[in-house]
Amino acid sequence: MNAELEAILSYHQASKHGFKAYAPGPQLLEMSIKPDPFLNYKGAPVLKLDTWSGEDIKSELFPAYEQAFSPEKLEPSGLNRNSISQLFFDSFALSVWKKAESTRWALRINPSSGNLHPTEVYLISGPVSKLLEKPAVCHYAPLPHALELRTEFSRETWEKLSSGFPEGTFFIGLTSIYWRVAWKYGIRAFRYANHDLGHAIAALTFAAAGLGWRTSLLMDTGSEDIAKLLGVSGRKGPEKEEPACLLAVYPAGKECPSGKVSSSALSDFENLSWNGIPNRLSPAHVEWADIEKAASVTRKKGTPHADEKKPELKPEKRDAGLSGTISGYGIPSGLDTVPLRSVIHRRRSALEMNNSAYMDKDIFYGILRRTLPDKNPVFDTLAFGPFAHLLLFVNRVKGLREGLYIFLRKPGEKEKFKTAFRSDFLWERPESCPHDLEFYLLVEEELHHFAAQLSCAQRKAEDACFTACMLSEFEEPLKTSGSWMYPYLFWECGILGQLLYLEAEARGFRGCGIGCFFDDPLHETLGLKGLEYQDLYHFAVGSPLQEIGVLTFPAYKE
Image (cartoon, rainbow, N blue to C red):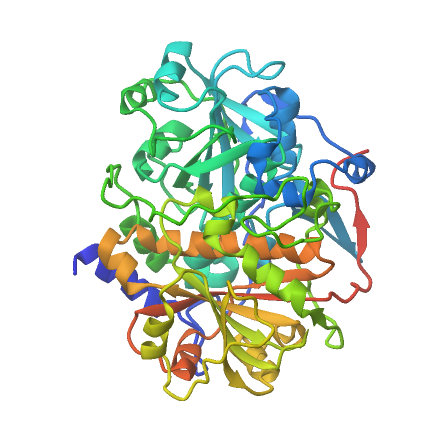
C-alpha cells in the first residue's frame, strides 16, 4: 500500500463518528468567522443571465420529469444566452429565500451540507450567441444569477480544447472551498464537500437533460490541469479553491469519446490574463490539517487509465420519452405529466417528517428501480462503478414488513454480501418485489428508533417512510485505482442523493440527505469486518411537515 492510500485511509478512520465520540470538530460555532456563502471575483465583468419567475416555471409543462431520463428524444437546444441562462438557473441558482424572525437565508437548486455550499462552478465555452463574443472562462455567481468573465482566449485555443468532442460541446468545471464546511463540521468536511459535488454533478445533469443535452465526467483530466483551465492554479490558504472535476456538456444524441481535453491547449492557458480578485470569505480561520492532507493525497494525475473503462453493461431499450414508462422496462411510471422544471425548483430538504404517512409499495419500488445505473442516463455521467448499494430501513411502506432490507444496484453481488454480512440475516425476497430488482429482507423488526440512533439521533430518519444507508464497495476500488478514487465514491453517493431528492419530489414526497451518522456501529450491526464495504451517506424519504414560523420569498425579483 502506497503512502497516499495509507493517508486517505487514515483520514477516513479519523473522520468517523462513533457512539463514544464524534469526529474532531469545532467546540462551538464562531459566528463572527462564518464563511460568506457567495464567492465573487471583484473587478471581473459581470454578464447578467435571464431569470424565470415562479409562475413562468409552473407554466412550463414540457419537458416532463420522465423525459429527463431520455434526453436524446428531445430536440437539443441551441447554444445561446437563453439556454445557458436556463442551464444555470435549473442547476446552481437560488431556489428561494427563507426568513424566520430577523434571520434571512437563501436556498439553492443544488443542496449542500448545512446550506454552506463549498462548490464553485465555472463555464468554459466557445462564443455564445448574445452572451459571449469570444471563447471564455466564466465563474457563475448565483446571488445575482450572472457570469463573471474571468478571461477570454482565442478561437484557435478553443478549437484545440474542444477537439474530439461533439459539435456544440462546452465544459463545466467544479471546485471546492473546504473551509466553508469545515467552519461548522470540522474534519468530516472533506466528506461533505464531496457529497455536495455529487449533488452538483447530478443537478447539472438534470438541468442539461431538460435542454436535450448530456453530461460526461472527464475523468482522465488531472486536478492541476483543471486548475489551469479554471484559473485557480497556485492558490494558497484556507479559502483556496480545490479543483474537483471537469464535465463536458453536449447534445444528447451525440457520443462523447474523450475523457480529457487536449493537452496541447493547456499551455495556452498558462499565459492568459485573468480578471477579478476573489472576495475574502472569513476574517479569520481554523486550520484543519487532516483535510489539507486528504485533499493533497486525492488530487488526480492526468493519466489515460485505458484499462479502467466503465464496465460494459447489458444494453437496454430505453422507452421513457412521451410514453411515460421507466427506462428499459414497459412499466408505467406515472410521471409523464409531471413537469421537470417544477420538480427541480420545488426541491427542498425535509426538516421534519410526518410519522403517520405511508408510501405505496409501487412508488417505493419505482424509486429503487430508478437508482439502477444501467437503466438511468443520469449515471452515464460517471466513468466507473457502480459501487454503492442501498441498505434500507423500511419504516412505513404499504405492503412491506417493517425492517432492514438491502437493494443491490448491480448483479452478482448477493453472495459477496452474504459472505460479508452476519450469517443469521434472512435474505428473503418480498412476494411483491418485481422480478428484476435484487431486494432482500434481512431483519424483520421495528427498527425506526435504531435508524434514528445511527443517524446521529436525527428524528427524520425514524419518521421517514424509509431511510437509505449508502453502503459502498470501498477497499477494492481504492486499491485498484488509487487514492483519487476516494472522493469519487462520495460523488456517486451524492448523485444518488440528488436522484432520490427529485424522485421523492416528483412522486409527492420529500427527501433529506444525512451526512451525520455513526459509521462503525452500523458496520458492526451488519457483521462487516475490515474495509471491504463502508457506509458513506444516509438519505431519508418521507412526507414533510410544514415549517412553522418560516416565511418564503422568491429567489429573484419578479
